[in-house]
Length: 113
Length: 110
Image (cartoon, rainbow over all chains, first blue to last red; front, side, top):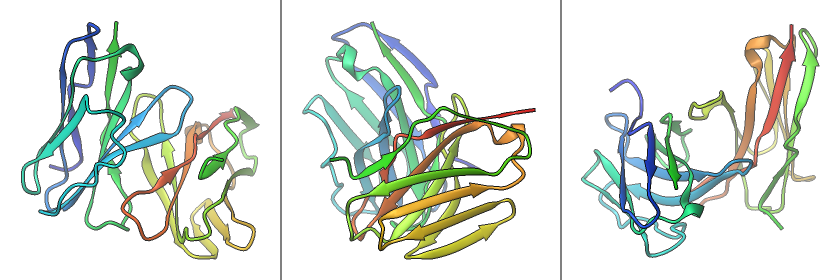
C-alpha cells in the first residue's frame, strides 16, 4: 500500500484481557518497528524486525508483550493480561533499511479500563 | 539521564515568526539525526534527516547539528498556522533504533 496501515485505530479493553494490534508496512520495506507513545512522553522503542533476522526484542517491557512478523509483511503486537499502564498509542513504522527515515502509521490508541 | 532531552514547550508564536526547536543528547556515538512532525492523532512524519555535523536546508526548514556540543536544532522560517504540531527529534548511532525526544508542542497563531 501507499503507507503504513495500522488496525484497529482505537481499542478499548478491560483490564486482564488480551489484545492484538496489526501493522501492514509499506511493500518492500524490510525493517519494521513498534514504538509506544504515552501521553506527554517520548516514543519508547519496543521491537525491531529486519528481514529474516532474529528480531531485536530489547524494548519489550514485560513478558506480557510479544510480536510476530511473517517474512517482510504484516506484523502483530500482542499484549496479554492488559494492565492500565499499557494504555498508550502504539505506533508501527517501516523502513527500506535501518538508517533510512521511518514511515509511521497513524497508530492504535489503546485504552485499558 | 535520558538519552535525548527536548523542551516540551508549549511554544506559541505569531504567524511569520522564526521558530527555533532544540534537543540535547548524551551519547557521543549518535551520528544520524532526524526531525519529525506529528499532528494530533496522527503518526509522526519525517521532516529532515542529517548525518553528522552541519546544516541542511529544505524550503522553510533548516536543521543544524553541533556534535561537539551534542546539540541539534530545527529552525522554521515564516511560520504558518499549518506548522502547528508537535516536533520530535530523533537520533541514532550504529544500532537498530532511533532514540526520540519527548516532543515540543508548537502553535502558530494567525
